[in-house]
Amino acid sequence: MAKYLMLKHYRGPKTAVHDVPMDRWTPEEVDAHVRFMDDLADELRESGEFVDAQALSPGGTWVRFDGEGRPPVVDGPFAETKDLIAGWMVIDVESEERALEVASVLSSAPGAGGVPIGEWLELRPFLDDRPNAVE
Image: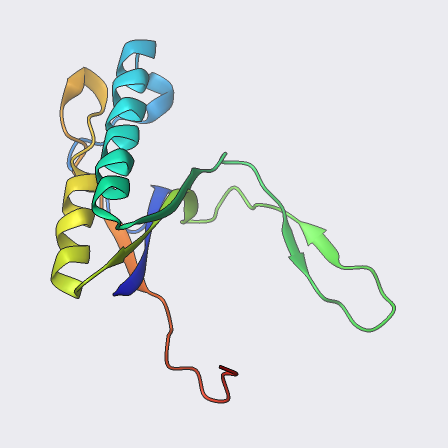
C-alpha cells in the first residue's frame, strides 16, 4: 500500500474544465458537490483506501521562523498568490494507477449546473524511504 495526497486548489496554474467559482454556485449545487465528496470518501472507507480528508477556507496566515528568541514573522496569504489549497484527501492504495483512478473520480465532482468540474488535482505520493528513519 502507498499513501497519496490529493490537493484541491482554489486557483492555480491549471484551470478546471468547468471553471465557475464556488461562490457563484447555488446552495443546492454546493450541497451536491459536498455530497459527492462524502460519498467518495465513504466508498474509499469501505475499500480500506481512505485515510483522511478536509476542506480548507481560502483565508490563512503565512508563518516562518525568524531567528532564535524572535517571534515568527506572520503575514498573508497574499492576494496575488497563484495557489491556495481548497482541501485535501489522503488515500492508501495498492498502486499509482489506483491513485490516478481515484484522483480522476475526485476531479469529476459536480459544480455549477451539476456539470463535472474537471478540476486539476495535485497528486503527491508520501515519502516513504527516509534515510535514518527509526523503525
